[in-house]
Image (cartoon, rainbow, N blue to C red; front, top):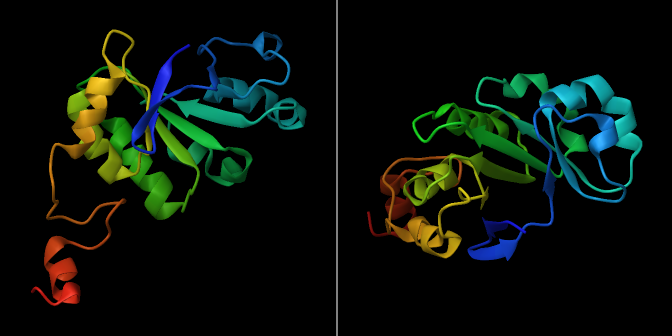
Length: 170
């Protein structure tokens, strides 16, 4: 079973991530599943009726706007990084948090490495499925690589100068 970093710890992943070409018949009964966007679009009503929690994953070239009206149906949204150098999912996470107010879990999947975690969290990710050939316990340390951030972000809407002014240290 794969691990996931969530809430500052490495945990066993209880979700089944379906392949991009998955069909409705591929879903096991009573299992929490992360389905690809194409399957959601083709089988929306059947997926909403099945037992178990439902989540969706978007590839880097799939727009958040395609699921905006459906967000209440998902406990989790996974955003795929097809390559370490493809950063489109950062924008998707920020849109989900800031424009659409999504409060559920946003998980990074795919080519996810330690060096990305701090920036991912700032954009709105709160769970990370580290690439299978990397140690998730080592990657967890990446969340503490920096002690402070100057700029505002999804996870901290106030820039440092405003936080300091509010604390009286300004």
